[in-house]
Length: 95
Image (tube, rainbow, N blue to C red; front, top):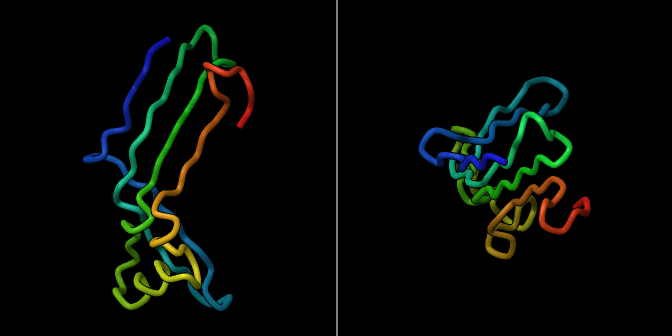
């Protein structure tokens, strides 16, 4: 099983959301870390773990970014990380 680390210097998590049904807001989280465990001969046991620094959100509008970091949305003071995990290899259970 090969293990790859997400390179924080070359990775981001991008998103786009509809605003008022009129326009799209594009943004990204700049600080993304994690690992991918993968074997092409055993795909069912692949596992991905990603952690995103919630405070690294960037939409190009500072006031909007501050609002998104507030308790109205991400509440980054209380929840500093956004995590994603697929099935765990060590536990054999789905998360």
